[in-house]
Length: 424
Image 1: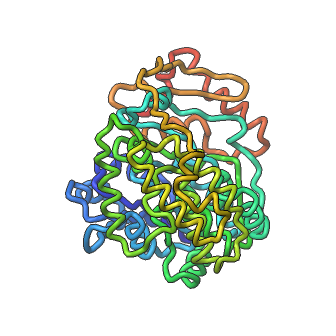
Image 2: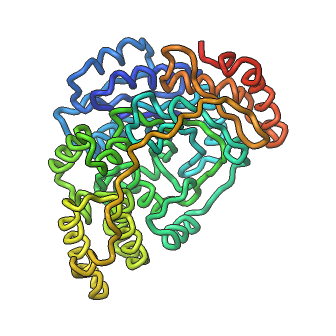
Image 3: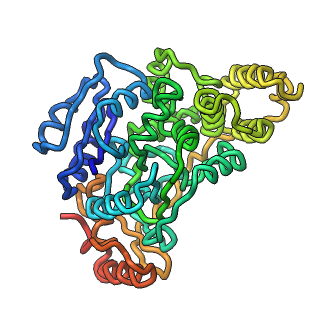
């Protein structure tokens, strides 16, 4: 079984080098690591070449394109039976990859989702609410060493109808999760391309259940989902604040507008509206409009998220929502921008006073928290090394004994403030 690890990137060589370093430590000859460079102007190509790993393949888009098009190009270059997409600031946890492979070989699912460790690079957040997570690795009892279980495609589709755009962590995903070659080809057969929404990672969460028969879920981390200074997620949230220059996300939006594919609700100003738009995109493009979406519920969620949208942007957004409602023949109160405006909460900017940042390492009965304190090591490869040492190389077995073993491996935290677990 051949597995493709895909890293779409664009001018983020400073984080890509560490994402690749973690991938290169995976002891597996039956993988490929495809780096898809979106016409970067920095030293991305040199960073890839410096790894000197025959499993790494560097490909480059012919010209600058949208994130969606780069994802499409990247996956089109793969040869694996299964495909895993990650960001250029993320990392796989190397010594957990054998377990991931073992699960795929044992269950042969259409897709697979594990839990993810969240990590924040230094300098990523200017918004105070996230400062406490910088350089932190946190493992919870409920998210490690869980038993794998199969969810049927019918259950996934029922959950999608029941929950709409309110995504569950266990949903199938290609970003931070695994899709089989069969699912990828089936989605392409339905709509011509795999990614038919401007946020390709989220779009596949909604689209993939249309062709999945067996989805594997395991409460165990194989992946570190990181936030970094140039990350799209960080810059999208920063865009909501009038105090930021919004440079990175403005570039993202300009490139998205060059993409011939247009979302049902273009230029989504909030995560909730963006997810609603992509849910509808999947409904139109792979479900043939047969997905029973509760549009009034999704509109109410979208309007609640308008508190994150500055007043200057609101008229255009509300007009787009009203047009969408009229096309769907929704009740009149959803089809007039003026009526929608009355239902919106006032803009609520994020607080500007940073909270105190707690960097205390601790072990309790249900969690372990480690802050990277080694000088100069705030990168995601160092975070992956800490996760490796805590999780151990075994596959867990029974959950309670495995968790107790993790706690024992974490005991050096109590002796020397976490430096014993610092990566070498």
